[in-house]
Image 1 (cartoon, rainbow, N blue to C red):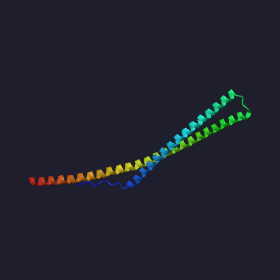
Image 2: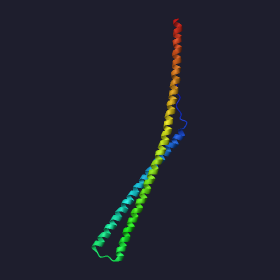
Image 3: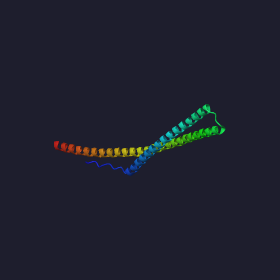
Image 4: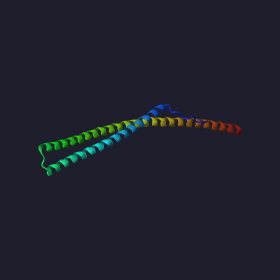
Length: 154
């Protein structure tokens, strides 16, 4: 007796969930790249703020400054510090977006795994059912052979 092939009726749903997981993985990858850019921006802004403070400090210590020069230097320091703070806030926003993308990917993976488990379970049930039917057929054949052999001996 030939075992019929197993057909999973929800294969389209499984394929859709698999694609959703792939899209979620791509989105996470893109967000990780964007976050890395944000980290680079923060590093540049931090370096610029440190350089501005160091330059201002060196200028004040080595020269006599007019009040307008001092105010200009102070404004430059404040601008670079504001840019550093903005870059830090942007990085935090990007990290939050990465966390969201990770959660979306985890949910998509769970959905796909659930349908994969369902497919495996249904395939196992299918195989067990056909194994049982095959065994019943073999048992009937063995019984028929045994009866014929017993009838001939009597």
